[in-house]
Image (tube, rainbow, N blue to C red):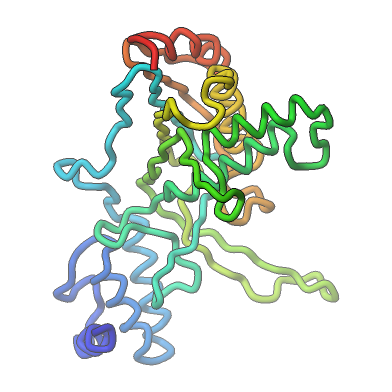
Length: 301
């Protein structure tokens, strides 16, 4: 079926933007550019220029009527919805998994609407790593106090669950993660330099989400009362440490590929936590101070 698709697209012999293909950065247009680029050497450059120009001006959004970007809902006592709004200070990049693309380093996008996004599973992995770094479980200065180390491990287990193969019985974490959607696309070039000549060798273009783009990290804290260690855990302290890890990940480490080049860093503009019977919006410290009240409002879990 894949062969038939590209054979039909190649038979069009027309620029994808002016041909009978879907608009936006969805599969029809992208696959059409890929087929267009295979005609000859000139066709490849023309197809890339066509895609680049169209991607910069595309209207990247999800259909509101389909409710594909839902708000986390704290339905039970002790649940919290966490929303952190940020603005990128550097480009963000995650490579697409399409088997064929007109670009060598395409940005990861939704297959139906062509909207760039950060997957929920990626958030979970990075935040777990950042929290372990923040709490001193890994990194250059690990915690040596055994009691503090056990408390930190319990907090990570409670929020994220255990990893595969870590234990015989699997335990689900208390956090549910949501994807983050972006509305803009730009292009960056990395130019590796030769160690001998100290001159650029082969510029490598990347399709990215540009600096200045806004995004929102959404989390739902929905603990299971019967989970191991739930009764002994200081839940406000655990969530407070989670917020510290979010701050470090976004503002210090970055959450993109090419983080060592400064990609994926952001400035946090708003922190909001919603409980079943109240909410708090403000600075990180103000929200952390309100956590005990928000966790107990509306009843006990």
